[in-house]
Amino acid sequence: MLRRINSKIALKIAILVIIEIILIIGSFGVLAFFESLGSSLGNSINIAGKNRYLTANLLLQTERYLDGSSDVSKLKGAIDSFQLNLISLKDGGTISGLELRPLPSEFLNLWNTIDLKWNIYKTSITDKIIIPSQEGKAIIINQLGIKKEFDTIASDIIRSSDTLVKQLGEKVDKNSQNLMLLQIIFGILNIGILVLILFLIARILKPIFALTQATLEVKKGNLDVSIKGKGNDELSVLSESFNSMVGSIRNYIKKLNELTKELEIANEGLKHKDQLKDEFVSMISHELKTPLVPIKGYAQMLLRPKFMGDLNEKQKKAIESIARNIGKLEALVGDVLDVYKLDMGKLRFSKVHMCIDSLINQTILELKPLTVNKQISLKSDIRASGTVFCDPDRIEQVLTNLIKNSIDFVNVKDGKITVRVEKAEDSKVIFTVEDNGIGIKPEKADKLFQKFYQIDTGAARKHDGTGLGLAICRGIIEAHGEKIWVDKTYSKGAAIKFSLLGRNLDA
Image 1 (cartoon, rainbow, N blue to C red):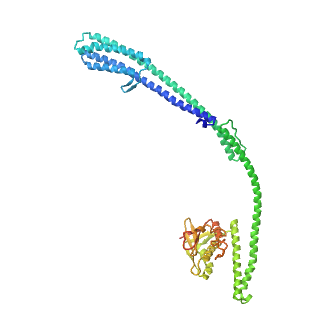
Image 2: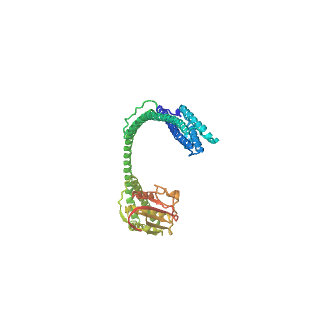
Image 3: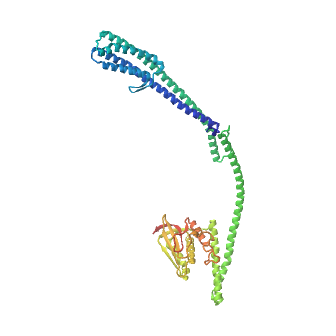
C-alpha cells in the first residue's frame, strides 16, 4: 500500500496515523491493565480486611463454645470460613462475588506470616477444644487461660492482616499514581502526534488555498497569476500543471482575440453582402412586380369585347391562361417576399383583439366563390366566442392558405372543408382546418412546414404550389408566440391546427 503513495507528505501522514492508531490501542491496553490491576488489588484488600472480621467471629464462636452457648459445628464453620478466605486471598478465584487474581509475590511473605499464625490458632483450637469434645473428654485447662491464649493469637493474626491491607493499599496508591502518569504520558504523545498531523495537513492545505485563490482570480478574468510550488510531491506537480494551464489559456485567449478580430472583419463583409442581398431581393421583387401590373391589366382588357371584339374560344382560353399564370406569378413573388421578411424578422404585424366570428366569417366569405365553382362544401364550426390577440390580415392569410390547400386536395363535388374554433386551457383558442381529402402520411407531417416541401414530389404533380404557403403559415403563427401542427389522430383526411391567445372567451 505504501508503495502506491508517491507523496512524501502523504507518506509521513500515513506513518503518523498508523503510529497514532497503535499508540491509542496500546494506551487503552496498558491503561486497562493497570485499571484491572488496581481493581484486583482493591478486591484483595477487601478479602484481606475480611480476615479481621473472620478472626473476631472465630474468637466469638470459641468463647460461646466455652461458655456452652454454642456448639462445635458453628466453631468449625467459622474455622472453614477463615481457611477459605485465606486460601482465596493467595490463589485467587471468586469469593463473596469478587474476582480475585493470585496475590502478587511481593506480598507472599506477609501472607505466610498470617498463614503461620492461623495454623497455630487452628491447631490450638483443634487440640484443646474440638478433639477433646469429640472424644467426650472434659476440658481441664483453665478456660480463662485458653481465652487469653486465643485472644493473643487472634490479635497477632489481625495485626498481620492489617499490615497486609496497608501494604496492598500502598500498592494501590502507587498503581493509581502510575496510571495517572501513564495517562499524562499517553495524552502528551497523542497530542504531539496530532499536532504533527495537523502541521502536515496545514502544509498540504497551504498550496490548496493558494490554488483556490488563484482559481478565483482566473474566474474573475485575471490570468496574470502563478503558484510557487516546491518539492516533488503531487501538490507541486498540481501547481506546475495549474501554471501551465493558465499559460495555455493566455495563449488561447490571445489567439481567440486574433480570430475574433478576423471574424469581425469577416462579419462586416457578411453584413455588406446581406445588405447587397436585401437590396437585390427588394430590387428583383420590385422589378418582377413592375411588369406584372401592365401585363395583368392588358390581359384583363383583352377579355373585354369592347377593346378586342368578340374572341373565339381558343383565343379566349389563351388569354385566360395568361391572366391565370400572371396571378400565380404575382402570388409567387408575394410568397417569396413574405418568406424573406419572416426569415429576416422584418415582416410587420399590427396586433389587435379581433372578434373570432368576424375573422372566420370574413375568410370564408372571400373563399366561397372558389368552393362554389367546384361544388365543395366550406363551413365553419365556431364553438368559442370572444376575441383573439393577433394581426387579422396575417391570420386571415394563414386561414386562406390552409383552406386553399384543402381545396386542392379534396374531390370536386363531394369535398368537405370545415373551419373549427375551440377554447382550450390557459386562455388559448385552437383553430382547425380539416377536410376529407387524401390526408397526410404521419412520416411526412413533421416536414410539411418546411420551405419548398411538397407532399407530391412526382414529376407531373396534380396540384400547383411552390411549397411556401405552409412555411409562411408557420412563420406567422410563431411570430404570434404560438404554434401550428398537423393533427396526426385525424383519419378522415387532413387536419391542421394552430393556436392563438384569446380574451373574454365563452365556450
